[in-house]
Length: 205
Image 1 (cartoon, rainbow, N blue to C red):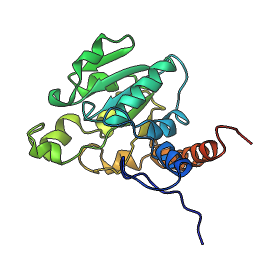
Image 2: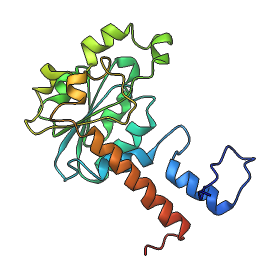
Image 3: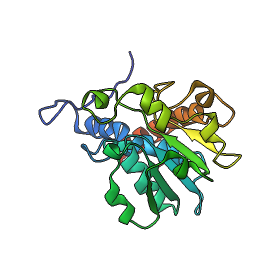
Image 4: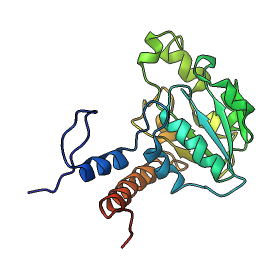
């Protein structure tokens, strides 16, 4: 029989408090504001050194992953460049040091060490936040032509699941610059590490 940890379903959830804490830690969702666990998998790989330049593309306004990425990257001294449709950009972030908001994806990508492409939730189109899938791919999708603007050893990241042909072309998603598979593997390792720490009361072996 497998050992399982009960996942919390809400304030009325049942199950051990330790198990619920572990589930919260491995899920790592801070309400609607942040989603730090996927960001740990990004920051645990890639190029997290101080002075690096990272572009984050897409629906940044509604993305908990993006908020956590931005916070973590700035803590590490990484310069963050944001781009996407105007209806999906929190422009107030441009007032923060080390964060730059661009109207054009090309400006955000230029000389980037890494590009983190966010998944576009298709319900945003129904809400009128962008005109069409085709238009989004044309103006904001990452493809080989745009990739050429970044540094030669740029890394491509994506929190998944991908909408291939929309926010990212298949050629880029599976190309030589893609670190998406490594990012997924890092995510598994991060979950295991968090679960171990929580179940052991924060004490490493």
